[in-house]
Image (cartoon, rainbow, N blue to C red; front, side, top):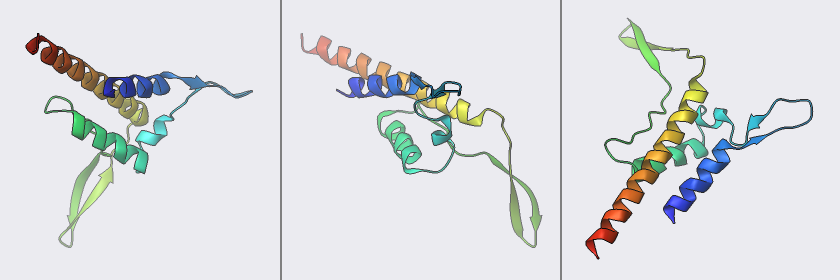
Length: 114
């Protein structure tokens, strides 16, 4: 059942929608994975629960400490042109890896009981 859910989710992520006089856009906007939202939090939780040490989704916005003023460290946002696309692609890969892991473990259980 979980592999069916992952297949459906990946299907929605791969689909595009086109309105008149616009270019095709993803059904699930890439921006959903960039901004802080319940959707992003649930996606992250899904990967944490069903992933393992090899399957991790690094969805945090990158910042670097630049200097210390009056004992306080300032953080600077690191710009990345395709960050939302990269997060989208990384999450898709995590879903695919989780699906593969589930199928392998399902196969192993079926072999043990034969």
